[in-house]
Amino acid sequence: MSGEQPERTTSRTGSGPPALLDLTIDNITPNTIRINSQSDNARLTYLMARLVTHLHDFARETRLSTAEWTAAINFLIGCGQISSDVRNEFILLSDVLGLSLLVDNINHPKPPGGTEGSVLGPFHTHDAPVLPNGSSMTSDPAGEPMLAVCTVKDTHGRAIPGVTVDIWETDSSGHYDVQHADRDAPSERCVMVSDEQGRFWFRGLKPVSYPIPHDGPVGKLLQLLNRHCWRPAHVHFMFGKDGWDRLITALYLRGDPYETSDAVFGVKKSLVIDLDKVDKETAKEYGVEEGIWLLKHDFVLTTQEETEKLRDQLATEALQKLGLNLKLVDHLPVPDLD
Ligand SMILES: [Fe+2]
Image (tube, rainbow, N blue to C red; front, side):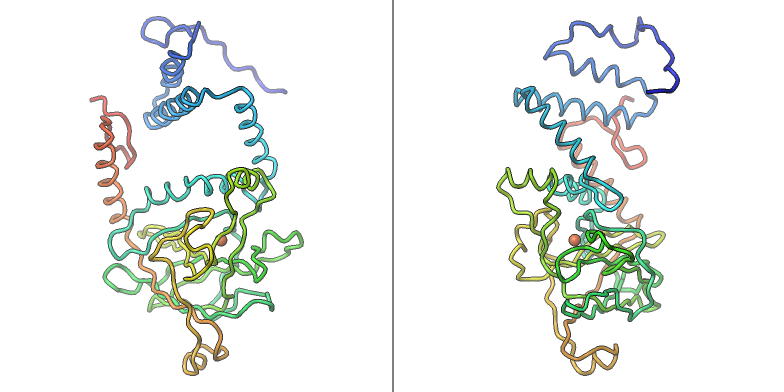
């Protein structure tokens, strides 16, 4: 270890935190919160106070054993060790604990008519090629070809041009490109931009169900919990344009064996779709073979302003219900000390 030593500080007196001595099961929590409350950042102070409260309560309520605490630390170390540029075990952990969906639902509430969000998952990358409408985003000859014809509109049914749409799915074996050790270029993923009519269309594969990576700590945890590690067949979409709430979502195929037991809780009824088959006319219009799978969907974005308003309103209601004396600063709750 190297580096400069931090400045020495002496124990404060007066209004500062008390001397931290003889801490007990009963007083460790308020004392930890007090020592963590010296920052000017009210939101950080509040987050740390609630985190410490729940962590300590967890230990008290479960009478957490030293062996269990050690196992948890080792579990987190394992998550870090197996993670890389193309694999993120912590997102997977957040997903299987239901936290990812919860955070998305809190942050991106949808007014009636708005397309609902779903989990981002650990397989989005930033190297997908920007492709013109009509392109194929797959290089897998084994999959069942699918034409996707989609639109992006606002809640009044008006087209939104110029929306950047990230699209990604697995290959026919149920693996994302990044899961192949010999990946030398992105595949089964692309970025498209909606045209003047809010349309985008591309060739991909009929999605297949797949197991989330289960050779690491998260997979072991699911096994211990007697949970399966499968996700129902889906295609991921992420929509972005200034002034519009970023939408991270996915479309799921109806009838998938895992439709109601997604390992990462991503499925919502409004996101379950039926595929069709490309008829003669559509085949001619889009330059594809007749009879391949057809995915048609209209996505509805909400404005950033609309979402912020709804999020603030829901946050205020939720905090009132919890009986907490909080106010919103920059749309985030902090204690109301005024
Ligand atoms: Fe996925």
